[in-house]
Length: 241
Image (cartoon, rainbow, N blue to C red; front, side):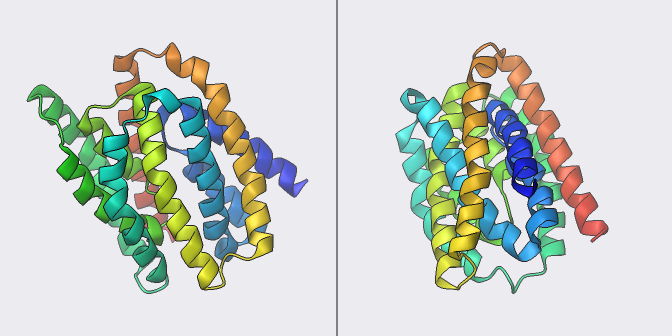
């Protein structure tokens, strides 16, 4: 029954994240913590995230912006390994508060950039990849951080989902390898990650027809709501931890 519950929540989370590009970890991690404990939840989610991102790549393969992916990944992959190694050193509450405030601030910043028709370059993606990659190694998910980065670069809908997923895949793989080397990712934990990830993969394909019908303007509004909700959620967790 425990695994059925995880699969059910994972399917819903995978479908939602398949439409908006993030949110699967925010929904699934509390369930993983409840079922398997906080120490196993992070490496389980790392494995599940690899599968979730792989499914988005397969669903939107033709729309991946490989130049943007390379610029982001070349700095993000080693940074994610470094972040995973320092996971137990940094105060998680301070990290949560910082990311929460950043996410909320990104909403007006995105609208300001849109009004002034400013877009990020490949160089900006490389810098963002290093910063977000490091944070990816520390916290469960940084999807809400990479969302505005790729949107500022000018990607939307399928191209955004595919490129963000392809860029994040290497980061989560790097994080998982680091966990394995330090003994946090055992065969048992890996199997649980595969089970949770399988439902996320199915959700990504369920979401595809809904995203194709979604107006770009509505998509951006949904992203604003997601970033605000994620930011407030992180602040709430930090202040009530």
